Image (cartoon, rainbow, N blue to C red; front, side, top):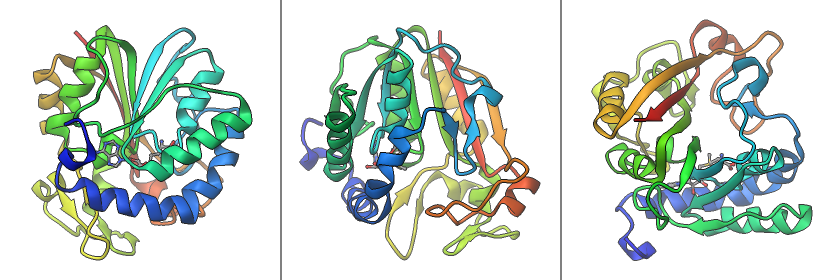
Length: 256
Ligand SMILES: C[S@@+](CC[C@H](N)C(=O)[O-])C[C@H]1O[C@@H](n2cnc3c(N)ncnc32)[C@H](O)[C@@H]1O
């Protein structure tokens, strides 16, 4: 795939949704996210220092798959990493470029999908996705790509919604009832926005990682910490719910 004409069929609708999100919230909120000094994870902003998932990133070549407005890459660049951001939504990349110029923190941004990344084999120490490829790209295509991009012993780290939260999610947010069968998590097309998401069941995802030369090292299930507040833009899950069940999960795998 070398141009957007050849993207998988679900990408155009997802890009439309992210173009709208960029105008409504990710664009306006990006400046604050870029300015943040601490690395945090997920809707309840759990500090990386409490989880220690990334370790020292100084000097690492990092590819962020589905970088959006690239605030996560910016946090890594501030710590001495050399990130490259990949995303198919031009509006998200435009926000990232504007902030790069404004803050003098420049790194490459590539317009493309995680299913077919126009970057060379074995050129990164860390492949990262924070709700990017991890839920918006077909795992049967983006996991092999992430593996291809990693050097031997490089790491793949990604954040996605918790399995239990996706089982209980309806159009208004996360409920306390099961809303779908487990196999339906493989591909969800939301009836209102027509967005397509991928939340592969855990056992299948571990097999897929292994089949692509990646060994799972950690699966960190994230709960809302004491004092957490409902996120302004991502209010689909409340801290009350997320203190009882893990709303999000961080996966860490290493290339053999
Ligand atoms: C929640 S945002 C990513 C958040 C990101 N961590 C940030 O810093 O803004 C999701 C992003 O995934 C991107 N995306 C959608 N489909 C994708 C695909 N097939 N491959 C890679 N990224 C994709 C969207 O364009 C969107 O910018």
